[in-house]
Length: 222
Image 1: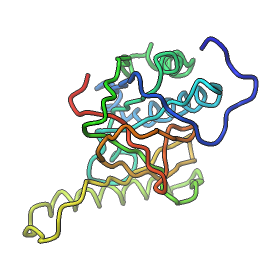
Image 2: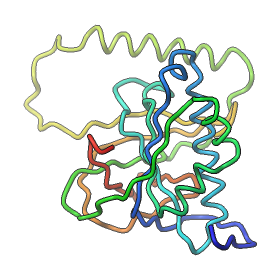
Image 3: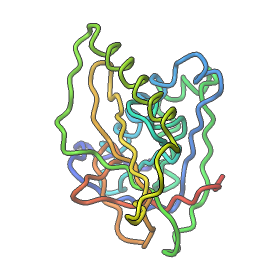
């Protein structure tokens, strides 16, 4: 960034989605169970950039691989960030995130983004639930086992019930992000039409259920 403001930005900011940054976790990262580490550092880097961006605008994020299930595993292993090229490069250059890149934990590439308002989109919203402080005990492990059992049950019973007469709703995926060890916030990922409306997000690149910000993500984009 050419100029960093002396005062940290706070509250909501406008994202200008002229470019996108796709961060793909490497196969080794997912196989070794290190995705939560990448997860935390992506959001931490995004947060640091947004807090220092000032009038330059904010970076926004979505996770298009979110699938049925609960917990951190439901959010998938791919992040798509939107913003100006300068801000997205600043995310990649973040010291901690760059260290993970050198270790081969992810691949990241910045591309220009088509923002014509006529297509699909994604929204990643923070729920109204309060930030959860998880103590360093067996609680997190028990919750992970419960989430695994629930996901297995969903997979086992899929297709057993006949079609409903109710109109289909867009898929809504519930998961969470770990902002740091022991501190999490709950999220909802959802597909919505991209109409070109202003993208307003917080310093973690997230919108809220009361003011969802749709990002111009088209599946299959590289």
